[in-house]
Length: 381
Ligand SMILES: *Cc1c(COP(=O)(O)O)cnc(C)c1O
Image (cartoon, rainbow, N blue to C red; front, side, top):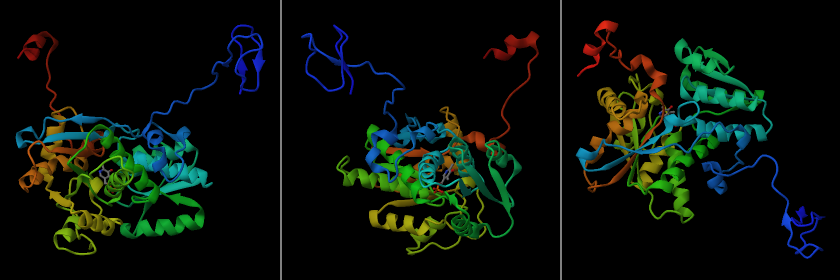
């Protein structure tokens, strides 16, 4: 504690009240690198189970909540939580950041995951950031195109031949043996990181419904836990109705829910354009079922055509998402038609990841050619 008299320049180590010269003293000018808390990790500091290692942050979280035109004709107010604005273009970064914070603190030298898409890129990026080795296990059929976005971060990418469903459990066992911290789809720290989505929404509005694209169930559990903790701590009064949204071609959770089952069953021959939510045997499926039942929440599934239509509508508003991320908006009509929704209800749809990751399914574009001499003709209406 250094004080200084601005009048005579005398310095003090103890917090004296006034200088010996009779004038007031003050603390010395701040020097060094200022640390100004402003992120969701800092605003909601008490809610995380491990200290967020801010030096490892890539700026994940604090994504925009955008008011949408979609839904007006249905008489509801739709808001889009744009998670494509994360460092590797999906919400996975929130969970990866917190889990890597833990892995570093716990002294691991390597992290890993089982994924082909967004989670693989996210874990590879944060491993690079933290100076950890990364082991990314992918299925035999993963496309080279997708894996480029993982390899660029320097991760060790391993194509595993064999039952992809067993890989989740095998990786956890092997990780324990070899000292690799596996951050799979519903890793507990990953799920905690997703709570930030609920916190940020609650800072801006009090939604009636939240539409959540659901595959493994990690995201759904994280958002649910976030709202539950906000209510338990008295920061909000009511928890919104959460809606798990799945693709019709792979909807093990919605199927078990509508059949009144306690446990999910494997969804045979999954087929959907929404690859990021095509887990046929979700590891958090039973946990999501339990939440849906306990809180009286909903599960809706949508067809590939409805997904593509929603993707186009979002692009028409200037937001390009991947098919999996359009499922929430695709389910909007069903939600409203299902009844019981009040006029002007506030609905948030989580836009989970960017469309630039799935260009192959994004259509042909619509560029036309024009000779320079005829430019006016081409540009005029
Ligand atoms: C991972 C992912 C989901 C689903 O999240 P789960 O935690 O597996 O339920 C949805 N959309 C996108 C784009 C994803 O990458």
